[in-house]
Image 1 (cartoon, rainbow, N blue to C red):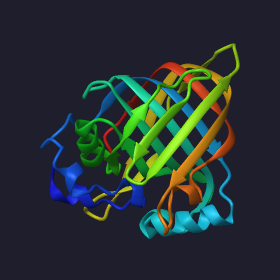
Image 2 (image 1 turned 180 degrees about the horizontal axis):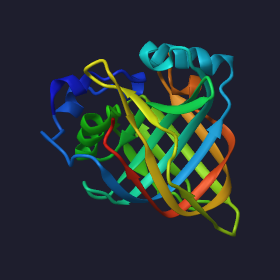
Image 3 (image 1 turned 120 degrees about the horizontal axis):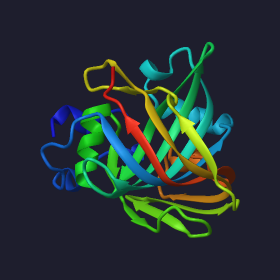
Image 4 (image 1 turned 120 degrees about the vertical axis):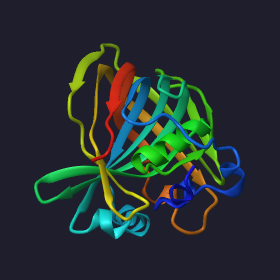
Length: 235
């Protein structure tokens, strides 16, 4: 992987160390990607502490003249992708700039080295490596453990699924290694169930950490099975 992509701006938990870098292949599948997955997604309203932490970890090129209005957490188990099956956790910030909304991902971890390379080189997503247990399902605990941090989540979902189609989700804006803003627009469809999700975050960091801004506690969200999505090349 090109060295520029190993030092993307990100939350401290997404920084790659030398041991992780040694596991990465040279290249990955190019964008766009078509994906099939099961998902667990929850949201929160950032309070003053969360906003202060977000301001520390998100580059000013992203956040300038924008206000963080939501935080989003997600466990995803990809069943089919251009680089095979893998699990992922995402920490996303939704910003409002004027009348427009956009998303930014300062934290993301997977259990697939080739997905790390794909995420970083295709979209400047700062993927790192972590260990996962469980998959998104009703009343089934999920967890992910990284270097000095751990996230656990369990969903209690409604029985009846609701069809959903999202031809144009929020644009995702990342800071590329060239200093330019990379914008991609994902889309998706599938069946979702409203859910209550209990989330716990542990971290041994003494500086800004996931515990400061990641949406933890009892949260509202959705559980999705057999979701299909696509992720365009950035423009």
